[in-house]
Image (cartoon, rainbow, N blue to C red):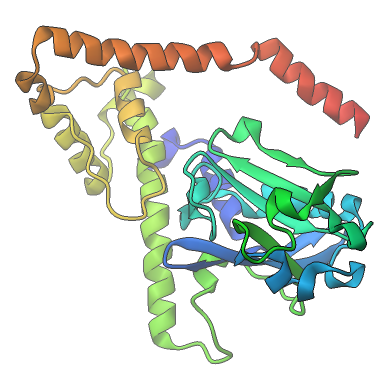
Length: 330
């Protein structure tokens, strides 16, 4: 019970953010192929991501009635729902920061999803569409297209031989009145009869995810240099789960962090341990194979990349001001 003294309310918030979700993410071979339970203006929808062409997916793509959304505004609202409810970093997959995990997307930098929304000049093969660009850098995500028109040659909207895009195929969700907690795990229950094997698998996956989350949160309090109060001295000396104690020991002795498949946190383990002042006893063996110049160039290249990234970021005050402006205009 003493361990709980060092866990903030964040644990509760983190857990409820998982259990209260209503969107079910459909995953095949580690790729996000669609989702159900997406709420837009009080209605509930489902979406499928398809790597094909408009002419094949939308009944020749030549009539307004071929498309689910009648206008760009409703399509933009759907795109925003994708960003806020579907393209998220989850225990089942980092669908926001790793765009290539969405079906039909092949770039690790960004994923473009197109939703055709109507026909304004079919004789010219010109159609309005809204597009969503989910970028690895989440701050630069784009959902746009209101009032824009695209020719068939631009995005392959009519030509089945053109380069294909990832399309969002929308429809109403027939199970809209069903509340589905912890969606990625309950997707295991694929039939009306729940089998004990599914229950066991659900419990195993849920325990696995929650134990990793538990260990990661405790790490912030166990590995600390603060000793200015009884609280922090208790956190330094408290017993921790064996899985976390082993991870800390391995890092302290070797500098390595070994991850199991599908772990929620990746480089974050190293970042926290280094950031909290825990330094490994040994350096990576690769360093011994490099000359001093090679090592200097290698580290300089890392620093240059970090500096370029920082230089490209907006000023923090300007970044916050942009959110305030958006909230006032909403």
